[in-house]
Image 1 (cartoon, helix red, strand yellow):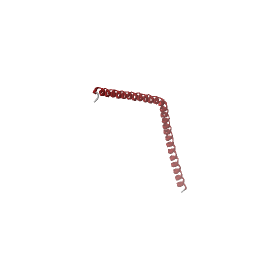
Image 2 (tube, helix red, strand yellow):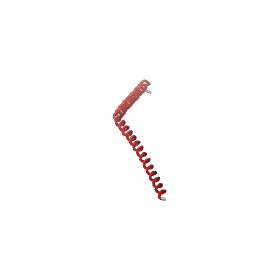
Image 3 (cartoon, helix red, strand yellow):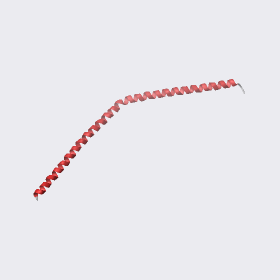
Image 4 (cartoon, helix red, strand yellow):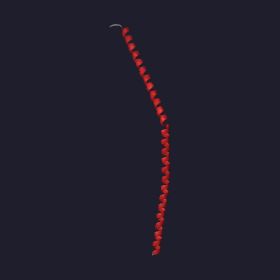
Length: 98
């Protein structure tokens, strides 16, 4: 009977060691994957921060271009309005008093 109990204890000890070894292996894999993901995030953040001034400059240039185009459109609209008023005034003068 003592021999059976000892064999059972050995089997339990082997299973315990196997479970612990498997979990240690999984922890190692997870640690490696965590390290890789953190490194990717660090590189991505570095790339974004590196290109941020370029993006800001491009945005400023686009904003200035939009303002210039808007100003030109407003100027042309004012010119068209003045031309229409001049034509209306001319037609009123041409048609004479009623």
